[in-house]
Image (cartoon, rainbow, N blue to C red; front, side, top):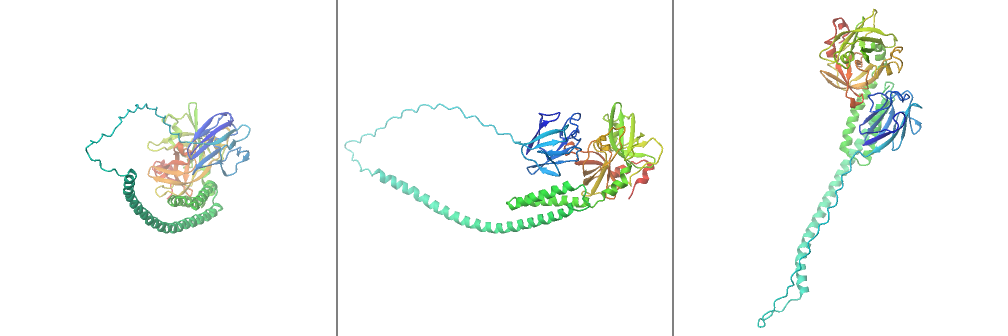
Length: 477
């Protein structure tokens, strides 16, 4: 399934873009799939809304925009389905409007042109045959009636055909009776399977309704709602006689996702934020006229901060920054810093606050060797840079505010800890916390086509091996 978004108002009015991916991010930030004008469409947020394509159905949700989203003039609350011709309004007067259309993503097969008529040669005139006259003296035998001869030939041929048809008819009756018996047996088995699957779906829907209403499910509304919605569609498919094997496999997958969501709902994210957010710093690095922002976290009281190598080295990959400044969460105070150490094996770097004082540190760094897929995590950092760090304010006068996003570990190998959580440009260097509030990874990127949902981080085992000696006290068992 492919969709076309037609921009009907705003700086890009008249433009059309077609997508066939499952998640389409919309906003002014360059990482979005549909990008609006960053200087003119000012009511559109950096990351404003998302369109999701699941099982041939499209839906839209607002992802925390400043000025809201409307569909056909109605404010968008939660997630709602999209239909042909729906008008999506992003923000207010200085925003943009889109039209939603479904397009056919299969090219029609070319129609072959009819072959030109071929002239047929005129049939040659057949020579008329005339029976030779019998010699007058030869006796002529009596000729049989033509109708009688034809009847005998037809009888000889149709007799064989009737015998074949009788045999075939008997075989059809026997096969039909056998299939009817097998069908009754299979129908009974199918009914039992369907009833079992229906019961499983209904029981899981009851469990997920309880999860959705739990006090610890903050931030899981969209994920739990999506699982519930897909379960409802599977119920409908089963009742309509859908593919039981496919439904059963999808139920198992959704059950795993529900289990992960349940684990996430039990994590005390407020405690993790309260214990660690003050130690998470917004890092600004200058190379010539270029200024880039990233994230980092304190590991010593005298101001050693962990961040990414690519944050401090910039686009050149090996340049020394002309200036580094950091601001810890909630302080509103910019502190000068200097480059202390750059890793040669991992996307890690260490900077040091170049000012006196005692600075906040994270609760601890824990070895990542025991972290397993499905474990809940939290990322605290500054996705989209100062647009979220200071809520769009001037970088000179803003007060940095770190953002917490929840997720789960999706893969753990010695050199990469992969998690399913939202990040964006500016998240580089953010700490990944386990459910105890200890660092188990350092975010460094992810594939663009994943729209920020597949996140790569340096495992804490590799970080611990490279910590400066004075930071050894931050390691926890």
